[in-house]
Image 1 (tube, rainbow, N blue to C red):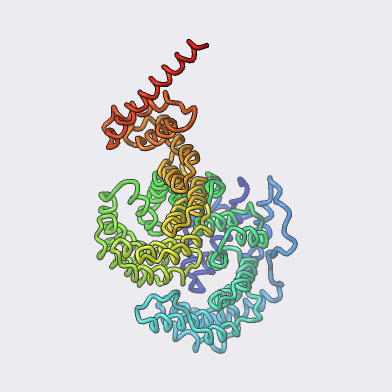
Image 2 (cartoon, rainbow, N blue to C red):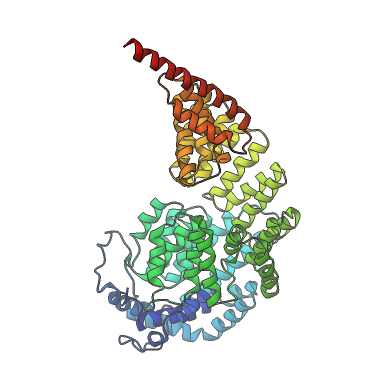
Length: 596
């Protein structure tokens, strides 16, 4: 990793800022600019030894891509490449010269188109560039056509949230025709974008990879590739097809971002981010600290998540991305005071960012002001129709208000945007439970378990549905499955398992879970009232089973009888009975001894 971030890479990232800006890919340009400034200044301002003075082309950094990548492959040798992996491409010098000449001839038209792009006057761009032949002009023309169609699609929704607004199939196929046979990396990005909207994800992923091979640091192409991945298996398969090794910083950032978005990140991704934050890489990357915070949040470690987000804000106090997730962690970890203060600050900072609207909505949710929370979550979706998190949270608020139908609508809109959102599937299950439609609820809970098989909440919800439906065996299996990822000190699920085994008449199995509860509670030095019922059940079993341990039963019952739990009366009565049984047992043993 020490040799990865060098002057050549800094030059490539700097070129990406310019090239993305010139094409109106402002998010990609901003991402690259932010990343560039996190590189140590000594590396950032050093002239790369391999840098050549060349003419301006539509892809100026491609000539240096192979050189900068080769420096990254030492001192650690990269693993063997996949035989079908893409390769970093550089167009022939003659073609690059031709592109440069075309851009020079069309310089005025391109400058005008960029000015209109900056002011979002997309309808004026395509007619002005109709006769231009350079790849950059063609990109601006096709991208502006797409922007116009996207805007019209948003108008047609008329404020309704019915998935991602995008041009219709006819318009998309026409746009796709314009870039069908291209080899330009920027036009390949547009081709992948159109294919993704048409639901042709495999072809979209292929175009995204080819685009990345032609221009490495276009983060929009990486985001497009990420949108084509829905599970860990797809991630593992696609990452082998990339034109750069798996230990390249860009590959690692892509892996961290993708696994975080899929909520499948683990300690491996945390360690990758830690390496990228080392002093010789990107030590001041608020982007990476934000991703670490998201990973900790998805791992339910709220304290660690808050720490990572606060490190992010130390680097950039006005950082907006990920503040919505920060608010969720604060919700669990610190209560409402900090949320209240930050909500006011962010509203003053940028009230038109969807993350800020979501932050404020979460504050109202914590205060149980459900109507106000829904208003801000709706505003977040109005600002960004693809913002699935806000739709999911809106559904949660409707659940709190017992408005099942509205919750179902919100969750289904989430799934229109992102089919692999387990929170929406889980929310649909909760909504159908409110309607007492437990068969339907079970279907959605089980689908959620297939997405996040190690989330104990999903298995517990499915187990509860099975229990309500009278399918006790299946309920037991679900509850047991939830224990795999549960805290070993957890006792509520074990109590449910004991109760269900009693219902099946399998008392011995039920008692075994009660004994585990007692062992855990005593080891944790919990109050006797927390496990009094388990003490009574184990004692009752020992009193009736042949050769039962009456002394153990007496010990448990004495503890409960001396406590302030609600089972004191029952424990006292049982204690008298077990005392008589012990006395009777001793008398019997004495008689047997005399006879012997």
